[in-house]
Length: 221
Image 1 (cartoon, helix red, strand yellow):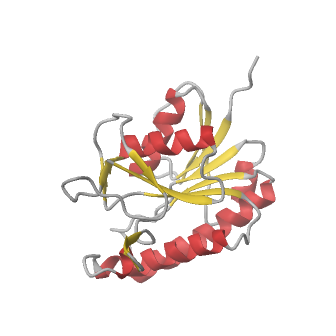
Image 2 (cartoon, helix red, strand yellow):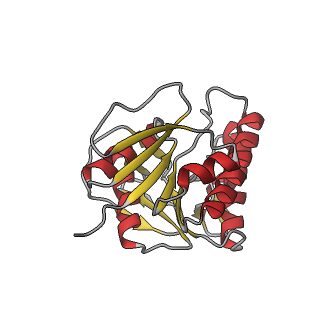
Image 3 (cartoon, helix red, strand yellow):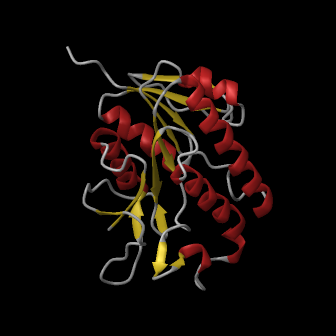
């Protein structure tokens, strides 16, 4: 009998993380959802909820141990902190995440990152473009550095970095979208968008297919 894949989801109560959690359970995966205690996911079959802090390496290692993969959709809550403070929290969280996952001996890691490191036009990243909101630059630049560190293979993990398009929000699970690597995807009308539900589908598809191991990918309509 085939073993059920056991995964950890950090940020499981956030906008994207909650959709990843639902998608993983829809696929009959065994999910450990990490909660800070502010709100917990509703009880479901194959779901275990644990308290944990992604900012603490030892807690990340303890929670991840024994699982096949870790998915992080961590966000500090960008509306709750000034931009510079949010950037510091993103940096420290990913430092402890990467160190903790490596310490746990789990190899497979998928990080939900940002749109800013995608190329908007030849030689110009979204974060450096004239249409990107200046107030988002501090945490976006930090996300770009995290991706660059992964690409330098500093962590010896089978990582994948998932960048959303410019616009992502609640919507339908259509399972119809395009995949890309390093360029911002736009539709025929010039829109760059996807639903959180379909982005979760793309992430769980990647977990199964391993198409973008040690690479970044993006998904959009």
